[in-house]
Amino acid sequence: MKDIKEKVWDKNPKIRNPASRLPKELVRSAMLETKEKSRMAADKVGRETGEESPVEYAGNRIERVEQRAGKESASAAYRGGKKLAVKTYEKLKGQRQKQKEAIAAPLDGETGNGGTSARTEQARAKKGRTGAGRSIKVKPEAEKTIKEAGNRAVKTAPRMVKASPVSSQKVKTQAILQKKHALTSMRAAREAKRAAMRSVQIAKQSKKTAQATAKGIKAMAEAAAHAVKAAFAALMAGGGTVFVILILIVGIIGGAAFIGSSQSSEPLSAEVLAHTPAIQRYASEFGIPEYVPVIQAIMMQESGGRGTDPMQASECPYNTQYPNTPGAIQDADYSIKVGVQYYADCVREAGCESPQDMDKLKLSLQGYNYGNGYISWAIRNHGGYSEANALQFSQEQAAAHGWSGYGDPEYVPHVLRYYSGGGLFAGLFGNGQIVTIAKSQLGNEGGQKFWSWYGFDSREEWCACFVSWCADQAGLIQSGAVPKFSVCTDGKNWFQNQGRWQGAGSMPSPGAIIFFDWDHDGTCDHVGIVERCDGTTVYTVEGNSGDAVRERSYAIRSDSIMGYGMVVY
View 1 (cartoon, rainbow, N blue to C red):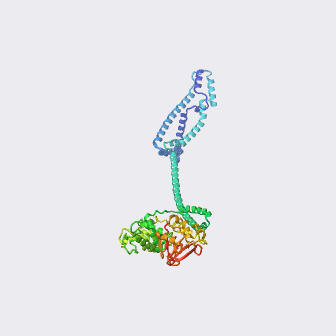
View 2: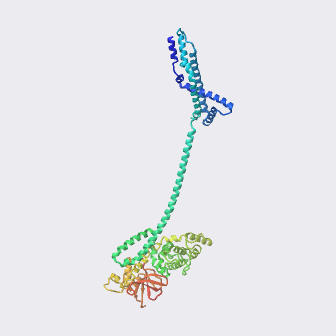
């Protein structure tokens, strides 16, 4: 009996809750069983009340998830779970049956003291220490626990099914990332567009700034030129000690002039330079002596100075010696005379007051190519010259005459590439330089500065010394353009011998040397420098005029004027 008792007690150990020793599979089976019972009960209640039970709700949720995630994976998971639940339920049912049989069966070989054993077992049963007692007392708590676990299983069932290859959360995350990427791309595109717009605005502003700067530099250079002209007299009168200031000023304004110069002219040919004396002579004769550089540029464009018709003036109305057909003139000097005379008409028709009046100068140049009828047409219809109306006039004339073309619509830029524009410092260099130097000495009395420079120990008639001093200061004696002379007759003879003499009654160029004969006996009595000529009056700067440097004026046909020495620069 002892062995039997020990065997029984070993087989059924005394524990308060035998369910806690069950494997996890039994717990899951119990949960599934409870879930099934709960579902059946809920379905029964739902059929009676017509409402959707929690189990039905969970089932519907599972069904919807199955449709989204894929029916095959959900069905496979369901079948596997159901099979496992059935197996576990059968195993649990067998265990409970064995427990009931062990408790109800009588003990084998029970002796007299077996009653005591029976009573002891009964007492223990009353105290709840037997297996059956424990099963009865624990059941409500276990059922409650199992029900709660079943409810949790129902609630979490959809999450178990959602564990699919591509979850909805992952899809949402990817969608959010794509949206963020798209927004980033849009922002980058907007920034790029704004940057491009800023670049365009900066470029426009830079262009405006450059234009304003160019205008400012030009204005500065012009102001500097006027300042130098105004101060030149004081600098020259101050002698060598002040000459350093002149060098500094010239250096400063020279830099401004270099910066402000937007164009540089192409060089003139040797042939054009050889025709310069004739150009100067006829420019003075027809009242446009200051336009010599312009006429040189026209000759460069027309022929480069080559041939018997360097000004291409055969078709001009002033050509009366040769046919009015291209290249008909066979005398270069006659071509220059006719061309300069016709260009003088264009200058007056355009209303051009100086070679620096670029708008009207361009009008006069295009008129030389088209004929001065273009000038009146352009003023009447457009107010002046422009590249557009030059092209329009050419097209209209070609259509009216049935020609393929008419003239050169780009004649103006073609000529201007050979023209320096006179420069901002035309009064300091070139024809105007000697005039500027001469005017700087206005007011000097006695002339000691000039006759002592020439080498005299005492006063001499110093008009020729004054002219020679001005020419020397302008570098014209060193270049051979003007001789150094103290006797008026010597100077006149030199210009005549060099072929640079211009007769009385003609219009002189600024900077020309003017010779006088007061007594009308053929002997030169006085000399000065031509400041300008307006076609009727010659304006001069003369030394020893009443023993001082003074400005004078004469009628262009005054019989006191012997003629002019042309200064070739």
